[in-house]
Length: 111
Image 1: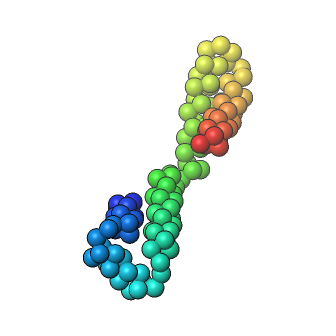
Image 2: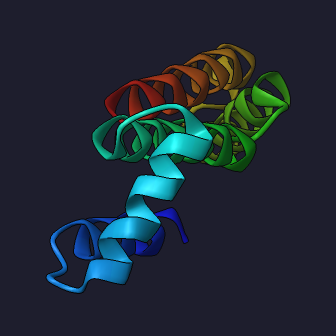
């Protein structure tokens, strides 16, 4: 919505119509800033709003998600090891858990 407002203000500012120029002058007088300052402030609000929206999208329980990935890979590698060499299954589960957590952290770091 602020992009539309910014575009509209810019269009009014360069309009040859006298009433449009008077409207911009009234806006500047009422707000106490020039049109450029008003537009910059709107862009700053847009950036802040986008940052807040991005933070809401991120999952809040990162530790739980990491543990789930670790358990998944621990189980997959543990089951595979159970059929190949049952004597090292416990160690393979631990390594699988570590690999799952590390892999998820590396993927998150790349994003």
